[in-house]
Image (tube, rainbow, N blue to C red; front, side, top):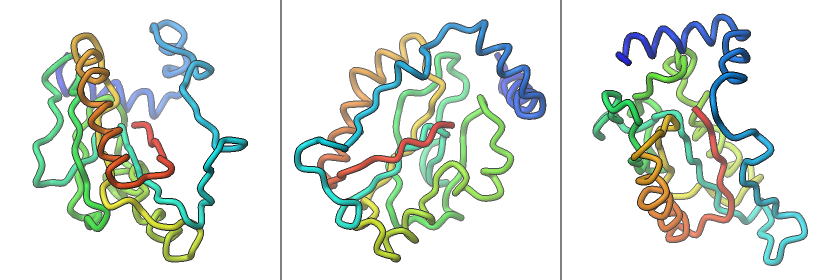
Length: 174
């Protein structure tokens, strides 16, 4: 599919929500009930939010303007990741992702990469701190890129988060 087609479909889904529901019933995929979820309640060594290090992982195709864009020519998507420093200015960020309508996020990237809100929570003492590195990735992953995601990208993300002492992750879909 061409980039233009992908953008048109994304805008149609945004403008006509019934199309999204119709497509979701007809396309293969996991149900929300199968999403992996780890709740800290009752777990050992739970870190209180006021002392926790929080990271953002967005699947919305966010990256620094100076970083290579995600590959929109590959029909299987792009399973690579982009490391975004916590202190990056919102004006230094861009979005490369054709599979959703990011018109609102183009105006304010915090819609899909809420780094300013994370900083505000840290400044107010609600969380310990924002992690020094945040992660940008692309959510539209199929075929061979799925294998790359599982074998390379996901373990790399986990290593980065572990190195940064991250206690909790906010996963933001695209």
